[in-house]
Image 1: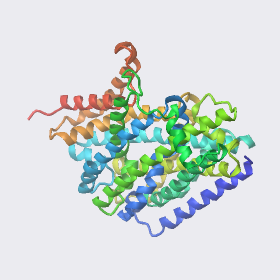
Image 2 (image 1 turned 90 degrees about the horizontal axis):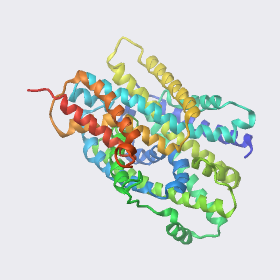
Image 3 (image 1 turned 90 degrees about the vertical axis):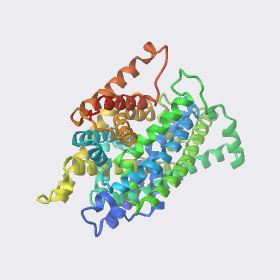
Image 4 (image 1 turned 30 degrees about the horizontal axis):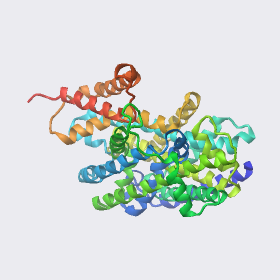
Length: 479
């Protein structure tokens, strides 16, 4: 694709985002950045969250991963649906009742300041890593499509990408994100639908023929019953439930959007309709995965060594100019819909949980928040550059594997807090939050040798949370 055309598409897209950022940040006050003044329409939040939850990981990695593990990923999505129900029925009412800005304030009320600080720091580390992994995909595609043609180093393209995100989020915060997510979700879904349409046209298949072909394909196999496999149904389904609770319900990035709705009922409606849209969207991405592998085999196109590279290769070089442009907008939208809200959530959590900024009347709060936003922008930049040096596996696997180790203590603490009324020795909780991921990592690395060939998959999150839960039981204060 012509690099100048790519530049024009990217420039037009970002000008649109900057315009939205300007319009939504007018007449903003101190709480607009954090809560959007609780004026977001639930249906807008629900639609925008589809793009944020799918992200660049789903957009690129899920279709490519079909060639490695068929439709087994759908087992995980099934578990996600149960997890979203728990969020809507349990966590949303709790957070609205407590009128929270940062959801980790719950840990302070339940356990104490050390637990509160531990939860917030876990989120800051987890979200920085997760956002960096997702944005890495977008930066890689932009590098191939545009920056390589002019000899621009990868770190320069990453810095440019993150800098543009900072420009349209630094004033309006979550209020801007709700609107930009809606735009980005539209482009993301349009890209996958157009890609499917183009492939069906090349293969001379109508809609019903396409559905029948995908359904009969060996790649559409969903269920894996081998208990030793990390793709086993029970492992993935249960992990899907708890990873959703941890990475959505206990994640400031996602919950901050839900908490911008006017009240609890609207936030619950938002979760319900979002989860349905999320499931349907993933069906499209999995179907696309079957089609791109068949298209490549029919046209004698060599499959790249990394499954993440197949969809970009076809879209940019084989589907035609229009499809290539839509793909570029789609991948940018997919990555930025999660990265921009991640930067906002990181800034919110640090300002509320660490700096206690709203309570500090003797400082320029806007100035401090601005510098915090800059700091996390730089942190994500350096993490992406580091990841570029060490990444050697499918990003979709890497993101959730990392989440299993970092979100486990959060899931354990919230589960403990919601299932009993025990008080704990708060000062020891930070040590527990370090030991739990460490123990889980050791078990994961040695599971084949220690447990007769058993391999942990996404369920490592449950092990991590269980270790945290048991540790908190050992820290219970005696009455």
